[in-house]
Length: 396
Image (cartoon, rainbow, N blue to C red; front, side):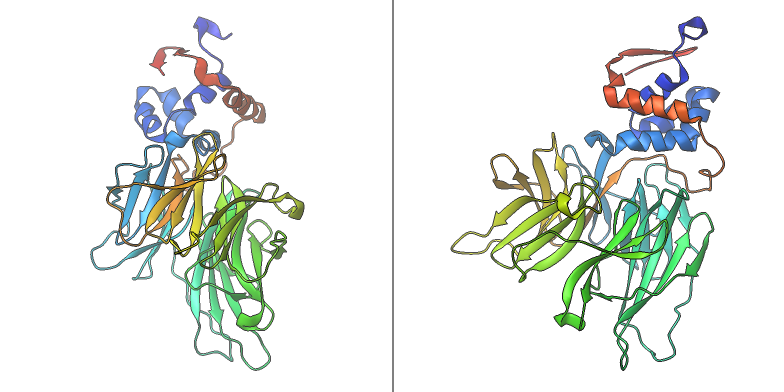
């Protein structure tokens, strides 16, 4: 035990990281040591490790005519967000969400990475469209945003799809913006035809995922292709054995795992989850929602997050309402949320302290401090009611 009965550094970190990010920002002013601790990149990662698993630290970000935040635990209190691209003249699109950061885009072709908790943002440099010699027009553009844990870097990917020409099938010119490098660079072309014009890459396990056609255009088989953000190589993800072929395929994320929905239009939807990333045998069917026999009541459902102890799943239905599926009773109920628009898109945001000013470079904790703090978090260090931080105390 250190002098004056104060707690060791790993226990201090483990206790502080259980607090909401907004509270920690206020606590920075209590002492220089606290400010230094909370501002450190390693503590931001430690806090994120806990925050992503704590419902009270989560919020739903809804995009309709504007960006609005909804408390995840209560599903109440829609609040309009004042973000860096907010303007009455242009709409704002969410290109991706990762580790408490949002990638935002508006019609002025501005892109920013924004942390809604710290209010920091980074405006990305512009990059020109590169046309292949045989193509004068492109079909559409999609993006993806995620984390490269090998290089401790956040990356935004842009795919510009061009139509097939003569004997060449559809492909996309791929560019990557690295927050560390603060510049765009071209990588190997994306050699598949994207299925959806408005579906950005789904981030799971250091990779972005899209649904593509493999074969001759829209008649080809649908597959899931991943771009590994660490190696910047493409790979095909093996899918579950669905037991049928005539369905609408969507890729998503649920509880940190890759998920797919097989939508047998106006009949039922099946939700599958890959429990161990990259292992085909780990696919398991989580739930099925069947249409009523007389009259269909929905067109599609997409997973949002597990609720409570994990025995329920929150889904968005037809982009205009939330429903909750009970994995035990196998019943689905509508979730009443006041103020929803007729159409919205939603992402789950974990409140984080991740910085955007290159502060993540060159500053690390000792490995044993991080490991000890993570272990204390996992065994429940929040059982301590009054913690002595040397000269300071905080009531939890």
